[in-house]
Length: 125
Image 1 (cartoon, rainbow, N blue to C red):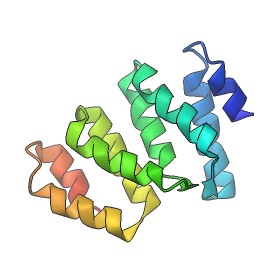
Image 2 (cartoon, rainbow, N blue to C red):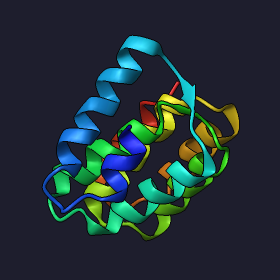
Image 3 (tube, one colour):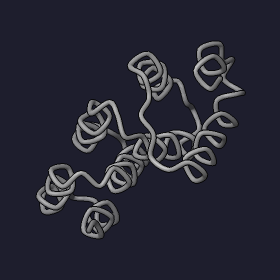
C-alpha cells in the first residue's frame, strides 16, 4: 500500500505516507522492506522540498531492518548532506543500531565542524 502511494505521489501525499510509515513502525517494530520499496524511498529523498519531511523520512529509514543498503546510504549522507540531511541520517543510524554504523558515527564526530551535528553524533549508544 505505501509502496503504491509513494510510487504515484504528486508531492503532496509524501508527508502523509511518511507519517503513516512511522506509525506503522511504532506499532509493529522493525520490519524489512523490499528492494523495490527501498528504491522508491531513496528516489523520494531529493524530491522532498521541506527539510522537516526529509529529516523525518531519514529517521523512518532507520526503522527498517533490511535491506542493509539503508545503513550504508545513511552513513554516506553524513559526508555529503546538508545540515538537516545529516541530522536525519544520524537519527536513522541510531534507530538502526548497527554496531558498525554507530562506530562510524562516533569516529566521524571529531571531523564534524558543526557543533550541533557533532553533539548529535556523540549521543549514540
